[in-house]
Length: 512
Ligand SMILES: [Zn+2]
Image (cartoon, rainbow, N blue to C red; front, side):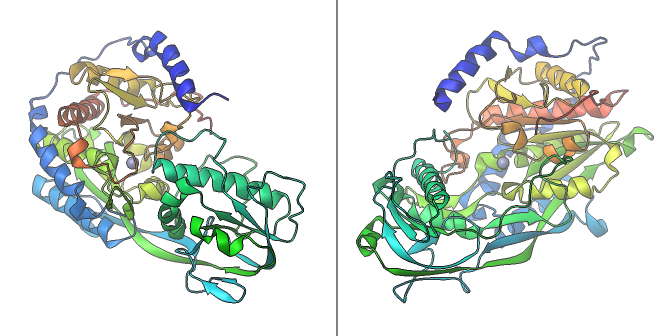
């Protein structure tokens, strides 16, 4: 089986043979819009100052549904006020409030006992999925589980971890976390398929390093948005609703092996789910356009203010600050707002910071369903996510190739804007339906694109610090962030002033 790296290399060869510029739609009547003087309001020094604040450790990682996301949201609203952006949220405020529903295993009403003695949930024995279960059974030690003739039916199978055979994704969290998760999935599935009533997986030396990470992320549970647009495409035959109960797959420390090596221990598992609501918020402001007719149409600049909060420590640091993700676009939006306040376009510029993107695009799914202006009046969504890292002279424009492209007009505007600003080499790999990361589907433009609003996603793509505590302001390339900001701004400026709003490509349909 090819590794992801091999597949990426193969894709890179294809990509270098077919750069995006060659595929971009030919411009019939090239609209040459001059770069406005107000672009000088976008300053590297402002971006840097703001990102050290918003993406620094004092914001505690801005986790959705916590006071830390609220603090960051209030800070952004304060910046809007200082810049002179008008509020466009509820009741004359900058805020659009909505609720997340969080479902997780209840620590208080769940228990696991071994021969009648309670084990401490999470720190001593950790559930590995968000499923409820009530199981009482005897243990059976099956070694590393490779002998498939052992009858595990009705037993709690205790298994030592095997290194995963599937290729691990190259980014997100730590290597040890991905290793542990891949093994847990493979061995848990194999033994429950063989009829085990439950599975206890004993960490090996690699997974042991990630033990805290596994339980701390699992304990958070799952999130959804109340009243938001669906996450996935609506199809005639929707997939069945996800399971809420199942055979428990539990994870224990390497040192627990001795407790489970002999058979016949009585294990009693009671895992119960709890569900509750907590608020998150979108922060919304507007710079009104100057044209009496066109000002009721909007170019929507999009970011997300949340990140992953305080989690498990990697190299002694537990604050997942999210400077690139997505402090980078958030401070870019503030800089773009400064430019629009200085010199408004014909159409209005709408700035939307979406809450809880990291929990499943929750804020954008809410706003797409409950937009503060009529959805039809939004002429373009220009979303950025992670725009300050990697090679200084290249960047990605997602939504620029079929099947992700929904507006050739808007792509043309972005290409024109690139020529007038950053002149990036446009990476065409990450926008492909065959790209292993599925990057197009992982940010806030998607709910709008699904509703046929012309939408683009600006990004400088993943890096090894993605979703780790290492994503800090110190690691940002500020000249590049400034170029990306000007590119997004100029794209929006062209869309805000074009005689004709960007159209939707006929037959647009996402592959999933
Ligand atoms: Zn992000």
